[in-house]
Image 1 (cartoon, rainbow, N blue to C red):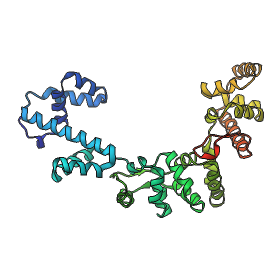
Image 2 (cartoon, one colour; image 1 turned 90 degrees about the vertical axis):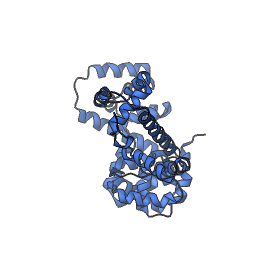
Image 3 (cartoon, one colour; image 1 turned 180 degrees about the vertical axis):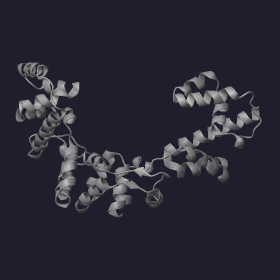
Image 4 (tube, rainbow, N blue to C red; image 1 turned 45 degrees about the horizontal axis):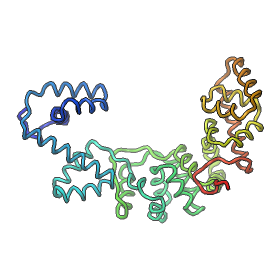
Length: 337
């Protein structure tokens, strides 16, 4: 294979790399590849007759540089990686390394912000337009986004929550512009593809991370602005399977409050974990009766099961609203002393 490094394809470089690493290491690499990738790579390896030692060293060196760049990116983003690589290899070679890496690597937007302290991110975005804040929060981890949303002024919270819920695909140009604003303060990362952001599930996850007071404020405001959206968000805030996060006292309170028929239907398709924790909080006699009745219940419509679960979830949220039970959340006002 008398070719220069620049003339090699990606598969040829990968083949040379695996040959150089030896069979034991290559076998470990194969474990992380798809069958199609293994087939193509094996075919490429089989076509290699002889590799010039200087070419092998070039390929190994390039792999080492890309591995270093990947490690630097994970530590502090592309900007940090480029700075370190420039010091090690010079400006031109650093750009080449980053270009080779980013041609195959898609770095998720606002990766830098997910590694930052929520208060730090809040300081940088709280003066921005609500749509900009919504965009940033939709990319953060739910718990982190919930803490930031809780700290924002109440008059903005519902507006931002609504913007997250109704957000659709965002163009790379807009994402890039927003990232560049934050890049002056925190390391940023870019992406070139259209990325699905926001949506109702995104705002549900964010609201699950805020304290109960903030949740109520946002949902009350949304009920005025967009009742249908508020209702859809409420439906997803606590699902039946989440009953496992309740403490024993709360589960016992729910069991006393709901209809036995609804509970039997709900448990019909529930996970073993849910069934176990519910039966554990019944008397032995009641649990045995439930199990026997469920066994002889016969076929039921999935729609009936889902409606029963919805009624139980509504009961759980009502009991929480009146202070009868507590659902653990990210905020501090759920701490029991």
